Length: 85
Image: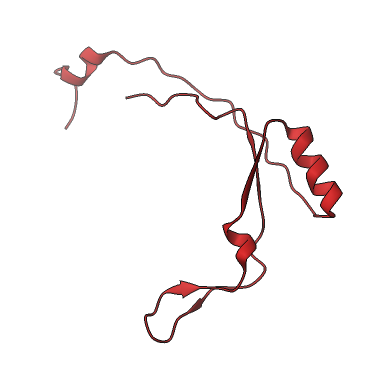
């Protein structure tokens, strides 16, 4: 199977964790009081994401997308004798 390109042109803004997670004494689950950790904001363009961060006074770091390397595959390669299991 090969992955599609749906939703690959949008930009994501995520907040850095403000505090470390701590273990719940009763159940042992990891959690924190930082609700921004759960927040993910999607933008159609990089400029919109940067404008939002500037407007809210947030420090931001831009991670440019990597170029995809597509190696065409044939369905028949799944049944080739040279295939190692």
